[in-house]
Image (tube, rainbow, N blue to C red):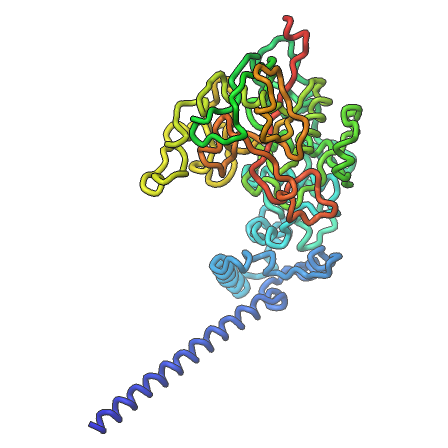
Amino acid sequence: METNNLRKNRANKAKVFLLLVGFLFGVGVVIALYQTSVYFSTNDSCTICHVHPHAHESWQLSSHVNNKSGVMTNCVDCHLPPQNDTWSHYTAKLKLGVRDVWSYLTKDTADINWEMKSDLEYAIKYIPNESCKACHQNIFPEELSDDGIIAHLHYDENETKLNLQCISCHLDVGHYNPNYSHSQMVGIPGYSEAGKVADSTSLYKESATVTLFVDYTEKIPGTSISFNMVAIPGGTFKMGSAKSEPFHRADEGPVHNVTISPFFMAEVETTWEQYWAFYASTMSEGRTPPEQAYTQNLEAVDVDGISGPTPPFGFPDQGWGGDDRPAITMTHYAAEVFCLWLSKKTGKNYRLPTEAEWEYAARGKTETPYFFEGNPMKFSDYGFWRKLFPAKTDNISSYVIYRKNSYNRSQQPRVVEPNPFGLKNTLGNVMEYTADRYDPKAYEKRSDGAINPIVIEGDEWVIRGGNYASDASEVRSAARSYTQHDEWMKTDPQQPKSIWWYSDYKGIGFRVVCEPDSSIMTN
Protein backbone atom coordinates (compact mmCIF):
# COMPACT_ATOMS: atom_id res chain seq x y z
CA MET A 1 0.00 0.00 0.00
CA GLU A 2 2.82 2.38 0.89
CA THR A 3 4.57 1.66 -2.43
CA ASN A 4 1.39 2.43 -4.37
CA ASN A 5 0.86 5.66 -2.42
CA LEU A 6 4.45 6.71 -3.07
CA ARG A 7 4.01 6.04 -6.77
CA LYS A 8 0.80 8.05 -6.84
CA ASN A 9 2.46 10.94 -4.99
CA ARG A 10 5.40 10.89 -7.38
CA ALA A 11 3.01 10.80 -10.34
CA ASN A 12 1.01 13.70 -8.97
CA LYS A 13 4.18 15.69 -8.31
CA ALA A 14 5.35 14.95 -11.83
CA LYS A 15 2.03 16.17 -13.24
CA VAL A 16 2.21 19.32 -11.16
CA PHE A 17 5.80 19.87 -12.27
CA LEU A 18 4.91 19.36 -15.94
CA LEU A 19 1.91 21.69 -15.61
CA LEU A 20 4.10 24.31 -13.95
CA VAL A 21 6.76 23.97 -16.64
CA GLY A 22 4.09 24.11 -19.32
CA PHE A 23 2.52 27.18 -17.75
CA LEU A 24 5.87 28.95 -17.44
CA PHE A 25 6.71 27.97 -21.03
CA GLY A 26 3.37 29.33 -22.22
CA VAL A 27 3.89 32.56 -20.32
CA GLY A 28 7.38 32.80 -21.80
CA VAL A 29 6.01 32.28 -25.31
CA VAL A 30 3.34 34.96 -24.78
CA ILE A 31 5.92 37.39 -23.40
CA ALA A 32 8.28 36.62 -26.26
CA LEU A 33 5.53 37.12 -28.83
CA TYR A 34 4.49 40.34 -27.15
CA GLN A 35 8.05 41.66 -27.04
CA THR A 36 8.48 40.67 -30.68
CA SER A 37 5.26 42.50 -31.50
CA VAL A 38 6.47 45.56 -29.59
CA TYR A 39 9.79 45.53 -31.43
CA PHE A 40 8.16 45.22 -34.83
CA SER A 41 5.86 48.13 -33.95
CA THR A 42 8.74 50.57 -33.55
CA ASN A 43 9.56 53.18 -36.13
CA ASP A 44 13.01 51.65 -36.67
CA SER A 45 11.55 48.25 -37.49
CA CYS A 46 9.15 49.83 -40.01
CA THR A 47 12.06 51.36 -41.93
CA ILE A 48 13.56 47.87 -42.44
CA CYS A 49 10.87 46.95 -44.97
CA HIS A 50 9.61 50.37 -46.02
CA VAL A 51 12.34 51.52 -48.34
CA HIS A 52 10.51 54.51 -49.81
CA PRO A 53 13.45 56.93 -50.21
CA HIS A 54 11.55 59.84 -48.62
CA ALA A 55 9.22 58.12 -46.16
CA HIS A 56 11.35 58.57 -43.05
CA GLU A 57 12.52 62.10 -43.91
CA SER A 58 9.03 63.35 -44.81
CA TRP A 59 7.66 61.79 -41.61
CA GLN A 60 10.25 63.65 -39.53
CA LEU A 61 9.23 66.93 -41.19
CA SER A 62 5.49 66.33 -40.73
CA SER A 63 3.19 67.92 -38.17
CA HIS A 64 2.85 64.51 -36.51
CA VAL A 65 6.46 64.90 -35.38
CA ASN A 66 6.93 68.67 -35.34
CA ASN A 67 3.98 70.11 -33.44
CA LYS A 68 3.23 72.40 -30.50
CA SER A 69 2.34 69.55 -28.14
CA GLY A 70 5.71 67.82 -28.48
CA VAL A 71 3.96 64.45 -28.90
CA MET A 72 5.29 62.27 -31.71
CA THR A 73 2.89 60.11 -33.71
CA ASN A 74 4.50 56.79 -34.62
CA CYS A 75 4.05 54.73 -37.78
CA VAL A 76 1.68 52.19 -36.21
CA ASP A 77 -0.45 54.97 -34.68
CA CYS A 78 -1.58 55.92 -38.19
CA HIS A 79 -1.23 52.73 -40.19
CA LEU A 80 -2.92 50.25 -37.83
CA PRO A 81 -6.36 50.31 -36.17
CA PRO A 82 -6.31 51.50 -32.53
CA GLN A 83 -5.08 48.95 -29.98
CA ASN A 84 -8.34 49.12 -28.02
CA ASP A 85 -9.74 46.94 -30.81
CA THR A 86 -7.24 44.12 -30.20
CA TRP A 87 -8.50 41.75 -32.90
CA SER A 88 -8.56 44.36 -35.67
CA HIS A 89 -5.19 45.76 -34.57
CA TYR A 90 -3.27 42.49 -34.60
CA THR A 91 -4.95 40.94 -37.64
CA ALA A 92 -4.18 44.12 -39.62
CA LYS A 93 -0.62 44.05 -38.28
CA LEU A 94 -0.21 40.43 -39.39
CA LYS A 95 -1.59 41.06 -42.89
CA LEU A 96 0.53 44.16 -43.45
CA GLY A 97 3.62 42.47 -42.03
CA VAL A 98 3.33 39.45 -44.31
CA ARG A 99 2.73 41.68 -47.33
CA ASP A 100 5.67 43.94 -46.50
CA VAL A 101 8.11 41.06 -45.96
CA TRP A 102 6.99 39.38 -49.19
CA SER A 103 7.42 42.60 -51.16
CA TYR A 104 10.80 43.24 -49.56
CA LEU A 105 12.07 39.79 -50.53
CA THR A 106 10.59 39.51 -54.02
CA LYS A 107 10.36 43.00 -55.56
CA ASP A 108 12.95 45.37 -56.94
CA THR A 109 12.49 48.77 -55.27
CA ALA A 110 13.68 50.47 -58.44
CA ASP A 111 10.53 49.28 -60.22
CA ILE A 112 8.11 50.69 -57.61
CA ASN A 113 6.13 53.79 -58.58
CA TRP A 114 6.76 55.83 -55.44
CA GLU A 115 4.84 58.87 -56.74
CA MET A 116 1.71 56.77 -57.17
CA LYS A 117 2.04 55.40 -53.63
CA SER A 118 1.93 58.97 -52.31
CA ASP A 119 -1.44 59.66 -53.95
CA LEU A 120 -4.60 60.00 -51.87
CA GLU A 121 -6.29 57.04 -53.57
CA TYR A 122 -3.48 54.76 -52.39
CA ALA A 123 -3.04 56.33 -48.94
CA ILE A 124 -6.71 55.88 -48.02
CA LYS A 125 -6.24 52.10 -48.11
CA TYR A 126 -3.59 52.18 -45.38
CA ILE A 127 -4.81 54.87 -42.98
CA PRO A 128 -7.73 53.59 -40.84
CA ASN A 129 -10.01 56.49 -40.04
CA GLU A 130 -10.54 55.04 -36.56
CA SER A 131 -6.89 55.75 -35.81
CA CYS A 132 -7.27 59.42 -36.68
CA LYS A 133 -10.38 59.68 -34.48
CA ALA A 134 -8.64 57.92 -31.57
CA CYS A 135 -6.11 60.77 -31.33
CA HIS A 136 -8.28 63.66 -32.51
CA GLN A 137 -11.43 63.17 -30.47
CA ASN A 138 -12.20 66.89 -30.54
CA ILE A 139 -12.18 68.03 -34.16
CA PHE A 140 -13.01 71.62 -33.19
CA PRO A 141 -9.95 72.82 -31.21
CA GLU A 142 -9.75 76.50 -30.23
CA GLU A 143 -6.99 77.29 -32.74
CA LEU A 144 -8.99 75.98 -35.72
CA SER A 145 -9.48 78.61 -38.43
CA ASP A 146 -12.90 79.64 -39.75
CA ASP A 147 -12.32 77.70 -42.98
CA GLY A 148 -11.18 74.71 -40.93
CA ILE A 149 -14.35 74.82 -38.85
CA ILE A 150 -16.52 74.87 -41.97
CA ALA A 151 -14.57 71.98 -43.48
CA HIS A 152 -14.77 69.92 -40.28
CA LEU A 153 -18.51 70.51 -40.04
CA HIS A 154 -18.82 69.35 -43.64
CA TYR A 155 -16.85 66.22 -42.77
CA ASP A 156 -18.88 65.59 -39.61
CA GLU A 157 -22.12 65.81 -41.56
CA ASN A 158 -21.10 63.92 -44.70
CA GLU A 159 -18.54 61.34 -43.58
CA THR A 160 -20.77 58.34 -44.32
CA LYS A 161 -22.57 59.69 -47.37
CA LEU A 162 -19.42 60.84 -49.18
CA ASN A 163 -17.09 58.20 -47.74
CA LEU A 164 -14.91 61.00 -46.42
CA GLN A 165 -11.91 60.18 -44.24
CA CYS A 166 -9.61 62.45 -42.28
CA ILE A 167 -6.81 61.63 -44.69
CA SER A 168 -8.98 62.92 -47.54
CA CYS A 169 -8.08 66.47 -46.50
CA HIS A 170 -4.97 65.92 -44.37
CA LEU A 171 -2.72 63.84 -46.58
CA ASP A 172 0.37 65.85 -45.59
CA VAL A 173 0.15 65.54 -41.79
CA GLY A 174 1.95 62.20 -41.59
CA HIS A 175 4.41 62.70 -44.44
CA TYR A 176 5.19 66.34 -45.20
CA ASN A 177 4.65 67.46 -48.78
CA PRO A 178 5.29 71.17 -49.44
CA ASN A 179 3.29 71.02 -52.67
CA TYR A 180 0.14 69.56 -51.13
CA SER A 181 -3.05 71.64 -50.86
CA HIS A 182 -6.43 70.89 -49.29
CA SER A 183 -8.09 70.47 -52.68
CA GLN A 184 -10.69 68.14 -51.22
CA MET A 185 -12.28 71.09 -49.40
CA VAL A 186 -12.93 73.17 -52.51
CA GLY A 187 -16.64 73.19 -53.26
CA ILE A 188 -17.75 73.03 -49.64
CA PRO A 189 -20.36 75.77 -49.05
CA GLY A 190 -18.71 78.71 -47.32
CA TYR A 191 -15.11 77.53 -47.88
CA SER A 192 -12.63 79.62 -49.84
CA GLU A 193 -9.07 78.90 -50.90
CA ALA A 194 -6.51 81.47 -52.02
CA GLY A 195 -9.26 84.05 -52.26
CA LYS A 196 -11.42 81.89 -54.50
CA VAL A 197 -15.01 81.45 -53.35
CA ALA A 198 -16.75 78.17 -54.11
CA ASP A 199 -19.10 78.10 -57.10
CA SER A 200 -22.28 79.97 -56.21
CA THR A 201 -24.47 78.97 -59.14
CA SER A 202 -26.40 76.53 -56.96
CA LEU A 203 -27.06 79.06 -54.18
CA TYR A 204 -30.45 80.72 -53.78
CA LYS A 205 -30.45 84.44 -54.51
CA GLU A 206 -33.92 85.20 -53.12
CA SER A 207 -36.20 83.80 -50.44
CA ALA A 208 -39.65 82.42 -51.16
CA THR A 209 -42.38 84.91 -52.08
CA VAL A 210 -45.53 84.27 -50.07
CA THR A 211 -48.73 86.01 -51.20
CA LEU A 212 -51.35 83.49 -50.04
CA PHE A 213 -51.92 81.59 -46.81
CA VAL A 214 -50.88 78.23 -48.25
CA ASP A 215 -47.95 75.86 -47.76
CA TYR A 216 -44.69 77.14 -49.22
CA THR A 217 -41.03 76.15 -49.57
CA GLU A 218 -38.62 78.61 -47.98
CA LYS A 219 -35.25 79.19 -49.66
CA ILE A 220 -32.40 80.67 -47.64
CA PRO A 221 -30.53 83.23 -49.79
CA GLY A 222 -26.80 82.62 -50.10
CA THR A 223 -27.22 78.90 -49.42
CA SER A 224 -28.56 75.84 -51.23
CA ILE A 225 -30.90 75.10 -48.30
CA SER A 226 -34.69 74.98 -48.57
CA PHE A 227 -37.42 73.62 -46.29
CA ASN A 228 -41.20 73.27 -46.27
CA MET A 229 -43.54 75.45 -44.24
CA VAL A 230 -47.12 74.33 -43.53
CA ALA A 231 -50.03 76.75 -43.26
CA ILE A 232 -51.78 76.10 -39.92
CA PRO A 233 -55.29 77.60 -39.90
CA GLY A 234 -56.36 79.42 -36.77
CA GLY A 235 -58.98 78.05 -34.42
CA THR A 236 -60.02 77.22 -30.88
CA PHE A 237 -58.97 73.99 -29.12
CA LYS A 238 -58.96 72.39 -25.69
CA MET A 239 -55.43 72.72 -24.27
CA GLY A 240 -54.12 70.29 -21.67
CA SER A 241 -55.36 66.91 -20.50
CA ALA A 242 -58.16 65.78 -18.21
CA LYS A 243 -57.41 63.91 -14.98
CA SER A 244 -58.94 60.82 -16.58
CA GLU A 245 -56.31 60.71 -19.32
CA PRO A 246 -53.73 57.99 -18.64
CA PHE A 247 -50.46 59.40 -17.25
CA HIS A 248 -52.02 62.86 -16.77
CA ARG A 249 -49.79 65.17 -14.74
CA ALA A 250 -50.81 68.11 -12.57
CA ASP A 251 -49.17 70.74 -14.80
CA GLU A 252 -51.34 69.60 -17.75
CA GLY A 253 -54.56 70.87 -16.21
CA PRO A 254 -57.08 72.12 -16.04
CA VAL A 255 -58.22 71.68 -19.64
CA HIS A 256 -59.11 75.11 -21.01
CA ASN A 257 -60.15 76.66 -24.31
CA VAL A 258 -57.50 78.59 -26.22
CA THR A 259 -57.85 80.48 -29.49
CA ILE A 260 -54.91 80.54 -31.90
CA SER A 261 -54.36 82.88 -34.86
CA PRO A 262 -53.20 81.38 -38.19
CA PHE A 263 -49.46 80.78 -38.59
CA PHE A 264 -46.96 78.83 -40.66
CA MET A 265 -44.98 76.00 -39.05
CA ALA A 266 -42.00 74.03 -40.37
CA GLU A 267 -42.98 70.59 -41.64
CA VAL A 268 -40.06 69.03 -39.74
CA GLU A 269 -37.73 69.95 -36.92
CA THR A 270 -34.82 72.22 -37.85
CA THR A 271 -32.25 70.00 -39.53
CA TRP A 272 -28.47 69.89 -39.27
CA GLU A 273 -28.32 71.01 -42.88
CA GLN A 274 -30.15 74.22 -41.96
CA TYR A 275 -28.31 74.70 -38.68
CA TRP A 276 -24.83 74.31 -40.18
CA ALA A 277 -25.72 76.96 -42.79
CA PHE A 278 -26.54 79.28 -39.89
CA TYR A 279 -23.32 78.28 -38.10
CA ALA A 280 -21.11 78.86 -41.15
CA SER A 281 -22.68 82.29 -41.66
CA THR A 282 -22.50 83.54 -38.07
CA MET A 283 -19.94 81.55 -36.07
CA SER A 284 -18.29 83.60 -33.33
CA GLU A 285 -14.78 83.47 -31.97
CA GLY A 286 -15.46 84.93 -28.54
CA ARG A 287 -17.99 84.20 -25.86
CA THR A 288 -20.62 86.55 -24.51
CA PRO A 289 -21.80 86.16 -20.90
CA PRO A 290 -25.36 84.76 -20.84
CA GLU A 291 -26.77 87.72 -18.92
CA GLN A 292 -25.43 90.08 -21.59
CA ALA A 293 -26.50 87.88 -24.49
CA TYR A 294 -30.10 87.72 -23.32
CA THR A 295 -30.40 91.47 -22.80
CA GLN A 296 -28.79 92.80 -25.97
CA ASN A 297 -31.17 94.21 -28.57
CA LEU A 298 -30.75 91.52 -31.20
CA GLU A 299 -33.66 92.76 -33.29
CA ALA A 300 -31.66 95.87 -34.18
CA VAL A 301 -28.67 93.86 -35.42
CA ASP A 302 -28.02 93.61 -39.16
CA VAL A 303 -27.73 90.06 -40.55
CA ASP A 304 -23.97 90.48 -41.03
CA GLY A 305 -23.64 91.54 -37.41
CA ILE A 306 -25.32 88.50 -35.87
CA SER A 307 -22.88 86.52 -33.75
CA GLY A 308 -23.64 82.83 -33.85
CA PRO A 309 -22.34 79.72 -32.07
CA THR A 310 -18.77 79.16 -31.03
CA PRO A 311 -17.22 75.85 -32.17
CA PRO A 312 -18.96 72.90 -30.49
CA PHE A 313 -17.10 70.70 -28.03
CA GLY A 314 -16.89 67.23 -29.59
CA PHE A 315 -19.50 65.91 -32.01
CA PRO A 316 -22.84 67.69 -31.50
CA ASP A 317 -24.64 65.21 -33.76
CA GLN A 318 -23.33 62.36 -31.54
CA GLY A 319 -22.03 60.63 -34.69
CA TRP A 320 -25.56 59.80 -35.83
CA GLY A 321 -25.28 61.80 -39.03
CA GLY A 322 -26.48 65.16 -40.28
CA ASP A 323 -28.42 66.15 -43.39
CA ASP A 324 -32.13 66.08 -42.55
CA ARG A 325 -31.81 64.64 -39.04
CA PRO A 326 -32.91 67.19 -36.43
CA ALA A 327 -30.20 69.48 -35.12
CA ILE A 328 -29.63 68.84 -31.41
CA THR A 329 -27.71 69.94 -28.29
CA MET A 330 -28.07 73.68 -28.94
CA THR A 331 -29.37 75.94 -26.16
CA HIS A 332 -32.66 77.85 -26.23
CA TYR A 333 -30.67 81.02 -26.85
CA ALA A 334 -28.97 79.45 -29.87
CA ALA A 335 -32.37 78.47 -31.27
CA GLU A 336 -33.61 82.04 -30.83
CA VAL A 337 -30.57 83.46 -32.63
CA PHE A 338 -31.12 80.96 -35.45
CA CYS A 339 -34.67 82.33 -35.83
CA LEU A 340 -33.33 85.90 -35.86
CA TRP A 341 -30.75 85.01 -38.53
CA LEU A 342 -33.38 83.22 -40.62
CA SER A 343 -35.69 86.24 -40.34
CA LYS A 344 -32.96 88.63 -41.47
CA LYS A 345 -31.96 86.34 -44.36
CA THR A 346 -35.49 85.85 -45.67
CA GLY A 347 -37.22 89.11 -44.74
CA LYS A 348 -39.94 87.23 -42.84
CA ASN A 349 -40.74 86.93 -39.13
CA TYR A 350 -39.47 83.51 -38.00
CA ARG A 351 -39.53 82.58 -34.33
CA LEU A 352 -40.09 79.72 -31.90
CA PRO A 353 -43.73 78.64 -31.44
CA THR A 354 -45.59 79.50 -28.27
CA GLU A 355 -46.53 76.49 -26.16
CA ALA A 356 -50.19 76.95 -27.16
CA GLU A 357 -49.31 77.12 -30.87
CA TRP A 358 -47.19 74.02 -30.52
CA GLU A 359 -49.93 71.92 -28.88
CA TYR A 360 -52.58 73.21 -31.30
CA ALA A 361 -50.39 72.22 -34.27
CA ALA A 362 -49.37 68.87 -32.73
CA ARG A 363 -52.97 67.86 -32.06
CA GLY A 364 -54.08 68.59 -35.59
CA LYS A 365 -57.72 69.21 -34.58
CA THR A 366 -57.84 66.08 -32.37
CA GLU A 367 -58.72 65.86 -28.65
CA THR A 368 -57.29 62.41 -27.91
CA PRO A 369 -53.97 61.67 -26.13
CA TYR A 370 -52.29 61.33 -29.53
CA PHE A 371 -53.29 62.65 -32.96
CA PHE A 372 -53.69 59.01 -33.99
CA GLU A 373 -55.72 56.18 -32.50
CA GLY A 374 -54.35 54.48 -29.41
CA ASN A 375 -54.34 54.27 -25.61
CA PRO A 376 -51.19 55.37 -23.73
CA MET A 377 -51.72 52.51 -21.25
CA LYS A 378 -51.30 49.97 -24.05
CA PHE A 379 -48.28 51.70 -25.58
CA SER A 380 -46.38 52.52 -22.37
CA ASP A 381 -43.74 50.35 -20.72
CA TYR A 382 -44.83 51.64 -17.29
CA GLY A 383 -47.15 49.66 -15.04
CA PHE A 384 -47.43 46.26 -13.35
CA TRP A 385 -48.71 44.40 -16.42
CA ARG A 386 -45.60 45.29 -18.44
CA LYS A 387 -43.73 42.74 -16.33
CA LEU A 388 -45.97 40.08 -17.86
CA PHE A 389 -47.08 41.40 -21.23
CA PRO A 390 -45.12 43.59 -23.69
CA ALA A 391 -46.38 47.02 -24.71
CA LYS A 392 -48.17 47.43 -28.01
CA THR A 393 -46.19 49.11 -30.78
CA ASP A 394 -48.73 48.87 -33.58
CA ASN A 395 -49.84 52.25 -34.94
CA ILE A 396 -47.68 54.43 -32.67
CA SER A 397 -44.48 53.32 -34.44
CA SER A 398 -45.85 54.66 -37.71
CA TYR A 399 -46.07 58.20 -36.32
CA VAL A 400 -43.60 58.53 -33.42
CA ILE A 401 -39.87 57.95 -32.94
CA TYR A 402 -39.64 56.93 -29.29
CA ARG A 403 -37.93 54.46 -26.97
CA LYS A 404 -39.27 51.33 -28.67
CA ASN A 405 -38.19 52.08 -32.24
CA SER A 406 -35.44 54.71 -32.14
CA TYR A 407 -32.31 52.58 -31.49
CA ASN A 408 -31.57 55.28 -28.86
CA ARG A 409 -30.89 58.01 -31.41
CA SER A 410 -32.75 60.55 -33.51
CA GLN A 411 -34.06 59.46 -36.89
CA GLN A 412 -34.75 61.09 -40.23
CA PRO A 413 -38.27 62.52 -40.62
CA ARG A 414 -39.10 60.37 -43.64
CA VAL A 415 -39.52 57.27 -41.45
CA VAL A 416 -42.80 58.52 -39.89
CA GLU A 417 -46.21 59.55 -41.17
CA PRO A 418 -47.43 63.17 -40.74
CA ASN A 419 -50.18 64.37 -38.43
CA PRO A 420 -53.50 65.76 -39.79
CA PHE A 421 -51.89 69.16 -40.44
CA GLY A 422 -49.03 67.55 -42.40
CA LEU A 423 -46.36 67.99 -39.68
CA LYS A 424 -43.82 65.25 -38.89
CA ASN A 425 -42.16 64.38 -35.57
CA THR A 426 -44.19 66.77 -33.42
CA LEU A 427 -44.29 63.79 -31.05
CA GLY A 428 -41.00 62.02 -30.41
CA ASN A 429 -37.62 62.17 -32.17
CA VAL A 430 -36.34 65.26 -30.28
CA MET A 431 -37.96 67.56 -27.75
CA GLU A 432 -38.80 70.99 -29.14
CA TYR A 433 -38.25 74.40 -27.59
CA THR A 434 -41.14 76.82 -27.27
CA ALA A 435 -41.20 80.57 -26.62
CA ASP A 436 -42.84 80.09 -23.18
CA ARG A 437 -41.19 80.11 -19.79
CA TYR A 438 -42.17 77.11 -17.68
CA ASP A 439 -44.75 77.56 -14.94
CA PRO A 440 -46.34 74.40 -13.48
CA LYS A 441 -49.39 76.49 -12.52
CA ALA A 442 -49.71 78.25 -15.88
CA TYR A 443 -53.01 76.62 -16.84
CA GLU A 444 -54.54 77.34 -13.43
CA LYS A 445 -53.67 81.03 -13.75
CA ARG A 446 -54.92 81.34 -17.32
CA SER A 447 -58.51 82.35 -18.02
CA ASP A 448 -60.66 80.08 -20.16
CA GLY A 449 -60.91 81.37 -23.72
CA ALA A 450 -57.43 82.94 -23.79
CA ILE A 451 -56.22 84.22 -27.17
CA ASN A 452 -52.63 83.47 -28.24
CA PRO A 453 -51.33 83.11 -24.66
CA ILE A 454 -47.65 83.09 -23.74
CA VAL A 455 -45.87 82.78 -20.37
CA ILE A 456 -42.98 85.21 -19.97
CA GLU A 457 -41.98 84.61 -16.34
CA GLY A 458 -39.98 81.64 -15.06
CA ASP A 459 -36.43 80.29 -14.84
CA GLU A 460 -36.67 77.52 -17.44
CA TRP A 461 -38.22 77.09 -20.89
CA VAL A 462 -41.10 74.83 -21.88
CA ILE A 463 -40.10 71.95 -24.15
CA ARG A 464 -42.63 69.69 -25.82
CA GLY A 465 -43.11 66.44 -27.68
CA GLY A 466 -40.76 64.00 -25.95
CA ASN A 467 -37.82 62.45 -27.79
CA TYR A 468 -36.25 59.24 -29.07
CA ALA A 469 -35.61 57.99 -25.51
CA SER A 470 -39.11 58.78 -24.17
CA ASP A 471 -41.72 56.30 -23.09
CA ALA A 472 -45.04 56.38 -24.96
CA SER A 473 -46.63 58.12 -21.96
CA GLU A 474 -44.25 61.05 -22.41
CA VAL A 475 -45.06 61.71 -26.07
CA ARG A 476 -48.74 62.50 -25.55
CA SER A 477 -49.93 65.74 -27.17
CA ALA A 478 -50.54 67.33 -23.74
CA ALA A 479 -47.32 66.17 -22.04
CA ARG A 480 -45.17 69.06 -20.81
CA SER A 481 -41.50 69.26 -19.88
CA TYR A 482 -38.93 71.97 -19.31
CA THR A 483 -35.23 72.72 -19.69
CA GLN A 484 -32.75 71.96 -16.90
CA HIS A 485 -30.07 74.40 -17.97
CA ASP A 486 -27.52 74.00 -15.18
CA GLU A 487 -27.90 70.23 -15.07
CA TRP A 488 -27.35 69.97 -18.83
CA MET A 489 -24.15 72.04 -18.60
CA LYS A 490 -22.36 70.28 -15.74
CA THR A 491 -19.50 68.76 -17.76
CA ASP A 492 -18.94 71.69 -20.12
CA PRO A 493 -15.13 72.17 -19.91
CA GLN A 494 -15.25 75.79 -21.08
CA GLN A 495 -15.00 78.82 -18.78
CA PRO A 496 -17.30 80.63 -19.01
CA LYS A 497 -19.64 77.82 -20.01
CA SER A 498 -21.06 77.91 -23.51
CA ILE A 499 -24.28 79.81 -24.16
CA TRP A 500 -24.62 77.88 -27.44
CA TRP A 501 -24.20 74.15 -26.81
CA TYR A 502 -25.34 71.74 -24.09
CA SER A 503 -22.68 69.29 -22.98
CA ASP A 504 -24.97 66.86 -21.14
CA TYR A 505 -28.22 66.61 -23.06
CA LYS A 506 -28.75 65.28 -26.55
CA GLY A 507 -32.46 64.93 -27.22
CA ILE A 508 -33.36 68.62 -27.65
CA GLY A 509 -34.06 70.59 -30.83
CA PHE A 510 -36.66 72.95 -32.24
CA ARG A 511 -38.83 73.83 -35.19
CA VAL A 512 -39.67 77.30 -36.44
CA VAL A 513 -42.94 79.10 -37.06
CA CYS A 514 -43.49 82.14 -39.27
CA GLU A 515 -46.00 84.86 -38.64
CA PRO A 516 -47.99 85.58 -41.83
CA ASP A 517 -47.96 89.12 -43.13
CA SER A 518 -51.28 90.90 -42.58
CA SER A 519 -51.64 91.43 -46.33
CA ILE A 520 -51.58 87.65 -46.86
CA MET A 521 -54.55 87.07 -44.57
CA THR A 522 -56.67 89.62 -46.44
CA ASN A 523 -56.07 87.97 -49.83
